[in-house]
Amino acid sequence: MDFDEFRRHGHAFVDWMADYLETVEDRPVRPQVEPGEIARQLPSSPPDSPEAMADIFADFENILLPGMVNWQHPSFFAFFTANSSPPSVLAEMLTATLGAQCMMWETSPAATELETRVLDWLRQMCGLPGPDEGGFHGVIQDTASSAILCAILTARERATDWAANVKGLKSTPPLAVYTSIETHSSTEKSVKIAGLGADALRKIATTDDFGMDPKALRAAVEADIAAGIIPACVIASIGATGVGAVDPLEPIGQLCREHGIFLHIDSAWAGSAFILPEKHWMLEGIDYADSLVLNPHKWLFTNFDCSAHYVRDPDALIRTLTILPDYLKHANQGDVIDYRDWGIALGRRFRALKLWFVIRSYGVSGLQSMLRAHIAHTVWLTQEIEDDKGFTLAAPRRLSLIAFRYVAGNVEPEEEDRRTDLLAKTLNDSGRLYVTPTTVKGRRAIRFNIGQTYTERHHVEAAWKDIKETAAALFAD
Ligand SMILES: *Cc1c(COP(=O)(O)O)cnc(C)c1O
Image 1 (tube, helix red, strand yellow):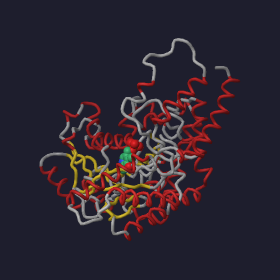
Image 2 (cartoon, helix red, strand yellow):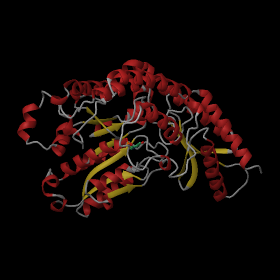
Image 3 (spheres, helix red, strand yellow):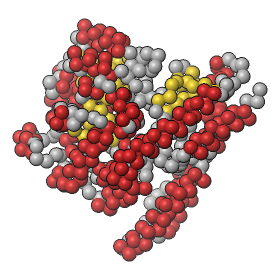
Image 4 (cartoon, helix red, strand yellow):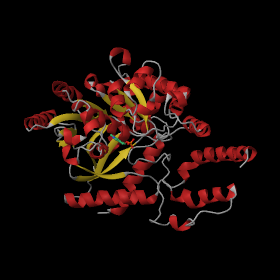
């Protein structure tokens, strides 16, 4: 493809992109496809001769698009959103065009320095303490999962005085990691990858509000110490995945400090709301934390992948991951940052660019208003559910996340569970909206998260009407 052709297709693609985003709500949120249905339409071997862009694009539109979940659909209420925005998409186009490898300062000076600057902007927006006050240094990871793995690896090394890195875990006493039963599965995965073994993970009970029970945590830590096991790391959540549980950082942090335990905060979803001063109460106790992660690629209008990882002691992270002799690290220290030593992968995309575009395009106040609108829509829906005898909340609302059950009719709990599941399935199969069926305290529930860039009040009102009407049609008793 020559550059004239590239220019022509590029213009046409941008038109297509604008049309797609403008009319995405006319498409089903979730496709109605059977496993294998898309693959059957794709040739099983690659083309030997060049194909025309028109043909490639036609297959994209006709074969692939009908098999995609439209994540930018305003009636996407499932999982957590992966919201993006036009400025973010434009920046991604530039990132793709430069095709730069941003593994270290030498290979992309501006990308490195922008990453440091824009993550410090985000840190200030979130009200997190800065490097000057013994606070946080930022790095962009691909995902929160990677940040959690980095935290557990750093904790492992700190707890073994960097012996595990050199001699392996057989040379050290057994280690333990603590998290609540509500915590995202990425913690368990990281414990396995870090070589600690899934048995090293202690899943701590929660109190009635779904937050980690600090008393149960203390008991588990003390039992491990008595058994010769080193408590290495606590992963606490601010906004856990199920129902948005917020763990009490203050008592958890005190315990960590008492025993020298590394404390990582997983706020992958809820962390975006730290830019709202009225939500800062969630960060109470943050002074005890060694690291924290939040995903602008979930709820801050920045395309996947962009996960903001804040660490208090970058030297500990670098010492854990670096593959360079120490003298080289020290030769650069204070001068330039080589982010390849701050994460798992060597190669790195220029991810800071899209976050910079987003923050500048909307301004902090613009981003705050968008999040406040999502929360206000959720408050409205919560009130509707509370006022309707046919439904009940399965957990208290957290920010823009709720879970509810269908409870109309005088039926057994098992039948309520079955109906709630059937309602979620019927709604999802309709393609009109997308919710997540889940379990809350042993009972089935519909999990509903509002965070899509283009979601307005009328989309939430239509969804609620749809939910009530679908339930009435399904269970006319
Ligand atoms: C989404 C989520 C994760 C995982 O995020 P990735 O960036 O996909 O790895 C971890 N923890 C919480 C609380 C989440 O909501």
